[in-house]
Image (cartoon, rainbow, N blue to C red):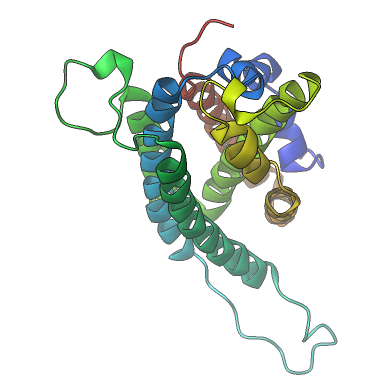
Length: 258
């Protein structure tokens, strides 16, 4: 069985898909201040639906965590077990997404964004809801969090989505920093919402630390699998989820012309 950490294994596969998902033209224009309020509203309204599905996904993962009793004679009594760390990370994820949903509301109000904007491909519909890619992401969450999937599979999906999101917005930040000067919000097509609020929020040190904690616990879980056959089977499943996440991530960004 491979001794390579599971997240390293994932990152070494489907690299072209990962690149496309995290350097999308939408992100380039977002960093350059060229995304209109209309396009940003369309994307943000779907991201908010994604966040609501994320809440249910975390709940499914929490239901799988079993924290074993500690041995009072253990020399490592005060060190958190892997299960305790998973539990803490998932609780943090719930807290973070609750804060995120409130953040969406406050920024939308400040900059005049519409959190119920219909996607351009769905303009014929009169009822707001998830578009096809958001629906695919919701299904991905529900499937990887279902009783038929292991906790490791679900945690891999969680890490994969968060890591891709972080790297994507770090790319947008690089584009923003390359603009040079100190543009005022009047020069931004969205009034400055991305430059002043969203990009700093999605590239902050706290978010990066959270993603690192996720990576570490996923690798720890992968390293605890007993048996070469079981290990290869679980890694194969995680690779399958990784491929699905990259497919959805690349298509989740709105179509724009850079």
